[in-house]
Image (tube, rainbow, N blue to C red):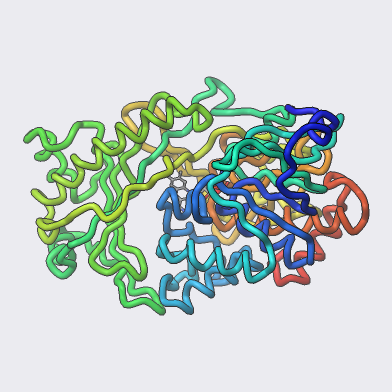
Amino acid sequence: MLDYKVVVDSWKISAEVDVLVIGGGTAGSVAAISAAREKKKTLVVEEFGFLGGTQTAGLVTPMMPNQIDKVPLNRGIDWEINSRMMEVGESGQWPDGNMGWFNPEMLKVVLEQLVTDTGADILYYTMFEDSIMDGNTIRGVSILNKGGRAAIIAKRVIDATGDADVAARAGVPFFSGDEATGTNQPFSVRFSAGGIDMPRFISFLNSLGRSEVTQHPKGSNTPLIHTAMVWGRDFPLEPVFRQAVKDGVLLETDGNYFQAFTVAGRSGEVFFNCPRITLQVDGTNPFHLTRAQILGRRAILRYLAFCRKYLPGCENASITSIAPMVGVRESRRIQGEYLLTAEDILGARKFPDAIARSNYPIDIHSSDEKGGMQLHHLPTGAYYEIPYRCIVPKVVDNLLVAGRCISATFEAQASVRIQTNCRAMGEAAGLASSISLDRSAPSRGVSGAELRSALRQRNASL
Ligand SMILES: Cc1cc2nc3c(=O)[nH]c(=O)nc-3n(C[C@H](O)[C@H](O)[C@H](O)COP(=O)(O)OP(=O)(O)OC[C@H]3O[C@@H](n4cnc5c(N)ncnc54)[C@H](O)[C@@H]3O)c2cc1C
């Protein structure tokens, strides 16, 4: 943590803004749009050279469904982004109404257009370094980039790093991992492969006895094909995996979790939600992240050899992308003014200061080497709400935290982390920062009920 008085006296100040968003990912890019829409001078700082975070750099697509009777539980900017992606033919609408079946490469473009058209500025290739504090008030951050080290001064800060980097450096207490052992959920290093003969691949999948071409999404020419394999769960691909392990093409652990599907706008390609990396999975530890990339790329080579040899239609497959960002499901979770629990989620609890709604189950990927996952569903037709207090950190004023690292237990985070919720939190954080500036009150002083009604006026489903 850096002292504000020292910084203003002796540091290079590279920008002064109303609202500073650190991390231009799933939540952060929406937070920037949201604040800039209220005519606040807004800057978003991002370590990559594009927006989208886990959705783009992590190749994590599609957005998990979050609808009841085809009506989205979150609307607002989330819905606008999905609609824009549909307009440009780079997403498709599933029969359940979900419009989040997006092409990550085009999402980079659409997010950047929306952010800059709204009037927010972007600073790419820049790492957050430290929080600049004046007592319990955050006054800005220090950054590192090719220009060296500098400070950005801000009236309000939104931590959208996914790992609560800003909050942690500002002195906000946090949790990480499950409450009993501190173990985090596994990482994944996602990838995609092209050059696939789809008609042959589809007829092979269908020949396994279970049709895997499940839908023809509206607005896209690409059929949605989905296939998966987890040992011992009766997946039709299990004998094929068993043979590949016997032949030395795959390792036993490669069958702990395998998932592949097509994506809108990417004909001839398949995207993979694997390999999964267990052990040493602290997303804030650069050594763990490095190990994951190295192990991940080795596993991707095995999966590629497997696809070419055992999956008809994939003989000429080649890698089209490997995620430059390790997929981190969960790392730090801040201690905020309210701690969301599994009971709140499964009990479909509602809050007067709600900023998002969700019916996504608690979805915990096991970190032990045997893999597997646990799913705990809400009752049919039920949904829970996320209160504003979950994005308001303890201790520090003028800081909000949006995205997967909000104040939630390990189990609750395993539901709230889906992308539509992160976007809704980002929109709420941007709007709350603006309201707090208008009221000359700290971010923590914003009335959650007032925020909720302001979000409603923006077409949020609250
Ligand atoms: C493997 C995997 C599979 C998943 N599957 C799905 C799925 O199918 N559907 C779904 O809806 N959700 C899924 N999720 C969950 C969801 O994708 C994430 O929880 C969500 O995208 C996280 O959003 P975020 O805004 O918190 O973080 P991110 O989107 O990761 O954004 C954080 C941003 O901050 C930047 N950043 C971080 N630190 C710094 C720093 N120090 N300085 C500067 N910039 C920084 C990053 O580069 C990034 O752009 C999955 C997650 C993973 C990891």
